[in-house]
Length: 281
Length: 78
Image (tube, rainbow over all chains, first blue to last red):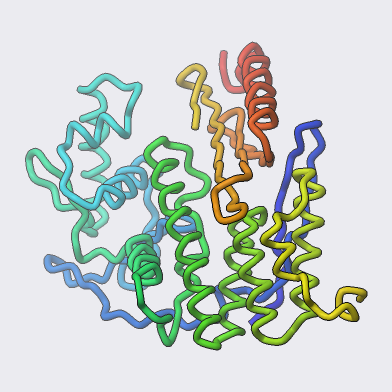
């Protein structure tokens, strides 16, 4: 495990820009082993194909990175995000919004041809519809399943949590509308999952893991008070009042400098009652 | 979320807004705004806000910057 600083680039209303250290903690991605899954093999080729959409676009076939032109990457990513068969005209229309329909369809056919030429039949294509081959492993789909399980009512925390799966945005440097909407939907899902996971781990007495999850939630959105409160609660549950105070002060400084506000009464109530000798530190 | 401009120059501004729970009910407005003036050469900048007025000011400033930039000649154009 590596120690890391979580930084946030900010731009204030008065035009000033800056970078803030918003928290310090463990690099959560390295803290947990990934859950083992049986490899998915394409029925037609027997090739194992893994598609990465979180943090960056990456396609790997049988352990070898497959390079695709941007136009083909967009087709693959779009169809992977659809999760169900889509008409060719719909796909072409969404991907080439400002292009005449005939030209958009031709662009789509060209992209599909380039993909097939590479020998990796990622997309099942009929005359009218397109669908991702179910054998393709998609990291986003796995992360969504993990988040859903973390949000299940009454479920306890898994014995081995794959936190790395909840530690990245969907294609962060893509600006297509269909990516923006999916990115925000997944971002909300993972934030809620991290909050839930942090609470469940703390209730189960797994404080070290709860702290790692809590730090991941803070790193995802440093201004969410609920994530900072969860960290304060975990420190207090551990009996570590000094760390609880440190986290509280970090949050108070953050919202004061960036938003010009104070922590809420709920946050203040959390640290009230802590031994005065600790708060004087 | 907004996307405006000519097809070959598109700016994007994303407002992530949420309400912090206060006294058990949703209360304080918070927002993180990510903006870029040209998605073809993205240089995303983030701003944060804690009121409707601050959010509106940031959006207006971005629109002004985008409009001014739209008057500039294209770097790769004729």
